[in-house]
Length: 174
Image (cartoon, rainbow, N blue to C red):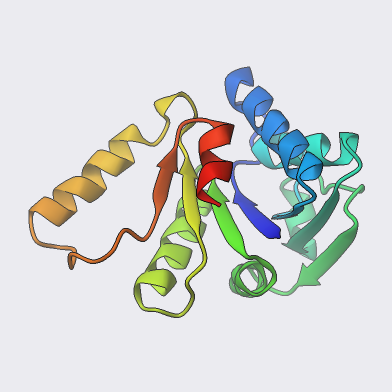
């Protein structure tokens, strides 16, 4: 299975996030899943990719060429797909992935999450979406989503994403 990881490329984040996503990468490789990600070599993206590669796993990096001005790209990817824009990158993520894991991240991660979530709600795909809530990172966002639902801003539907606090919970859902 090709599993897309959305997450931060920041070098400023706590080791708790780095360590947990490294372990996730190790587990992806051990289970013979292919990591699909933004191709970054730092932060959560880099840690997960390192876990995959340290365990002889495969990965597909997807990024516009110009992104290397902002962050170094992972050179150990099994395949690297260069695209012209961030929109094309998100389209490739959707095309190449069978499931999505949303790990802690910033604005870019939220953009990717809400797009894939919206597309699922609009029945453009039916792929699993899992929020990896490391260290309760997404608790505030989840509270906001629940508030939106309670206030009538969301149409009550089947559950379109799951929340996992551990790596085991991720794979139980997938």
